[in-house]
Length: 127
View 1 (tube, rainbow, N blue to C red):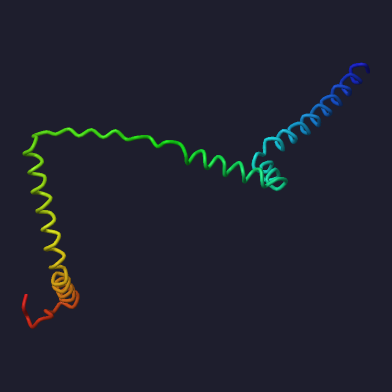
View 2 (cartoon, helix red, strand yellow):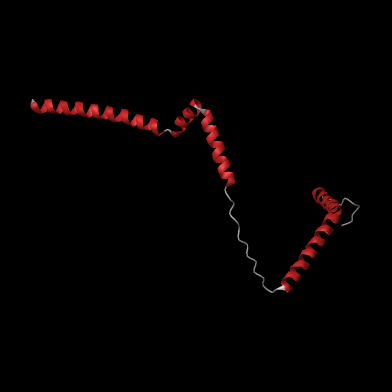
């Protein structure tokens, strides 16, 4: 009988410990819900929060920017620079030529695509 009585006492202690642990766990979860606590704090006093955010924004805006280091390594000296200049000039000339020829190229391509789709030449058999 003493064993049964002790068993019942232990079961009761375990039940109390579990309920106490459950209550503590729920309180801990409530304390760790940062977003809910932050929203409540903002609702209680929005001006200090907005002022603090503005102050931090001003501080961050005043930080000096990191200077980028740019090192130029010249291989070939003046000849490479002259060659690059000529290449750039040629590319510019090709772009201008393409811009001027674009309407004619578009019309030609439209004609070819319509010929392909219909299966008949659009300009009286030329092709």
